[in-house]
Figure 1 (cartoon, rainbow, N blue to C red):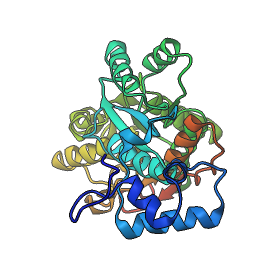
Figure 2 (cartoon, helix red, strand yellow):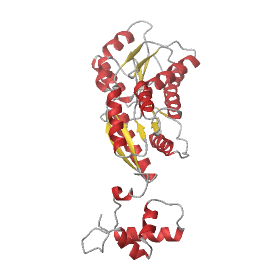
Figure 3 (cartoon, rainbow, N blue to C red):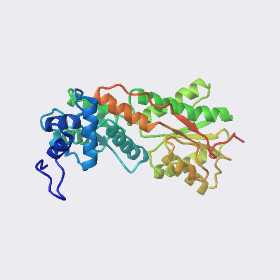
Length: 331
């Protein structure tokens, strides 16, 4: 970053901002780094000049003389899935609102070495903390053990896990309220903390309603896996005493399941009701439109960012049930 006099077309530097605002370059630096001991009128004047001159902060230069890069590391898994993709976007927005940036590294969440390598790459960049998306229980434990001095948060653990459970319980309670007593489940991968929380919420709601758990299948979160279990589910649905409703651990598996069942001549919701989880924006356009559960992902992202920064955060909104056409009373 060149902080000399700005020639026409040249990049504006800290000295140019300082001269226009009538302050020192040190004051400009303190305003940029959100130093608390700056008079409000001085801060406002500097920020106004920054905006007027179109000054763009050089993040590398900004860290000189400080102990923070103002960057948070995010370890993500498969961004082709709705949850991780939306989670990254939500974390980026939450970090920006907190005056931070994010640096993202991708890893195979099921492989401890892959997650550790992603963490090492981010920590080598001097990030101020790590947020893990969709972690496996073992790899999250290994990560915290390997870096005991690093602030680490996960998007769907702690109070986030409680809301995952509550959302899954909403889905089951909806089916019970419709009159279903034979309810099957398509669970997510058992090693994912997110899948465990949703499974726990479903089982709790069934127990609270006095309903015995029905048959259970599992998938890898994808629509392809939802379609793959459709023949087995169809066979159960068509037996006497078979399930009249299925709760899927996410919308993508529910989508594949609906497609596979309809291809086999099973009517949804006439023969079997289907409920998902995530409220994927496409869920309203499935045929039939999918009943599902939505989470406050933006609120969860703000909570995770605040946790890493050691700050207080507002509590995310509770999960919400979105009733559409894929669920109905049993015949």
